[in-house]
Length: 242
Image 1: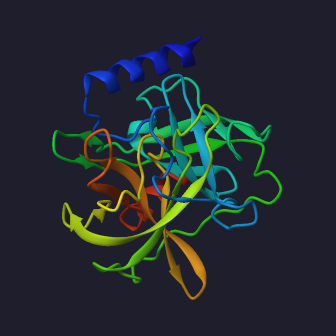
Image 2 (image 1 turned 60 degrees about the vertical axis):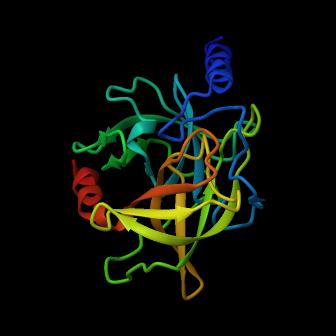
């Protein structure tokens, strides 16, 4: 019943032309616009998961055998329930989150979002075949023009489907804490892809470089912005020990 109510809400919002700052799920918009379906043997499929809360769907990246990295706006301040889907909603491979932590400095401002990053912990270990993704080290810098692979479950249908697309870095914001991608070719992320990864390929190895935060307007046709994961390695290590 709750899912039906939220679908009705987003339908009304779409008709009225509301603008959504973050990329929380909307069933009216396609997953990773213009993207390709991620095959089961792709490393991206083995490290990218879907999150379901009482309010929305998001994406996340496995970074250890019991921890995910996602966007803070995907997780409520006192989120009572988060379900992790390891292969989309059709799969029986799920885990319930044992706890979730938003960054203490998270701010959702009118023209930007700061510290939009969160951790989700779970018990039971990883299902067979799934693997953590390493975060891009601080000494492996990004530059404008670098091509990254982005992925997300989005909300193209009621069950969700993982897709990916390659985008080039167009700019950095907030003293290089945010990565900006141009989406003017109608290829990129949109609603439901929040929290999903941007991967940098180095020596044939994928590294997590960013976490999907927000895009422009409701159609996501101009740009998208990612929180730079590298800047939060120390914070992640600290929270992992707590």
